Image (cartoon, rainbow, N blue to C red; front, side):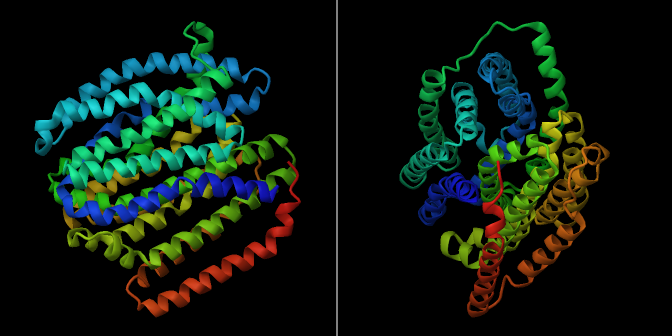
Length: 474
């Protein structure tokens, strides 16, 4: 089991990182043609667009996950109905998106307003539903090699066009928006064929009223959860724009935040690799299966801590090597805080997925809303005093809350899950973040020594626990 799980994790987590890693090298050739203002415009537009993100899918992804595991004999018909509902809603959502974007695009980008709106709205309307449904079915069928191949191909295409549009045609922020669309087009063709022709999952537009109402009772409570994710991940740039922070400074913060986003995507990919095992262990329902689930999450969490700590140790050198534009090199300390903040994700799976499996989705928003609104309040108070750099501190605090609050709410405690030692993990997170920040300017030789120690410690823990995980029965 362990071999299969880790092979899935490596494919699902590492394959998408291959083009991203290649993209980091491309930064050496694109950043000289970009300005902090380009990054600011790009980040601000998508931060405002994220204000509608909670309503983009109406919680359908959550329904897809639960229906696949809960209804093994009739999940396909459920998915077809949900796909039809999703397509119908996407048309309404597109009109709301156009209306919002028309009014919020920064004045620095006003000359390209309709081009920007088209680049955001049209690809989402055409591609996103197929990519969502197609990638999830491959994920739940544990066909991670196929997902990895699609990620590599789409990522490399995006990188190629990113270089062409920015370095060759010098399109600035417009090129930053246009290049990812090429990658999404590739992903669309990867998933549309197996989705429609192999599994024969096509949209059904005949909806039964009582079915829609049943689904809405589950998904509507998740809207505050997803909207809270917007408060947590994107609202800082909106607050900065509302406070008239210069687009160049917003761009510097967005550059640092993008480093954290890479690690968010990495944990998201790991979560996908673990999702099938996670669901099977939970629905197995035994005390031992819950212990096995906890220990697997601990293993992922420990591995991710070692990875982020090592990365943050070398963050200064990374920015010097890959960001040839000196304007961007000053924000590496902010990137360290944000990357360490995203360590929470593996432990987050424990409480959140348990609530989803037991249909207690109405309680999830309390976790993320508390974290999200904390981020907004901290930014409103701190940014006018300490400037855009304070947003990195507020992001770390809010992500910390998001990762651990689920263990303390009454709805989760009622599930009688095994104990996850949240207080110990909280202390570990804080101590390692302090270590990462204090060591950021050490000499390279000392960083090399610490990196060797971290890797040796991780290898020893994995070796000592390998026998246990190999014997987990699912």
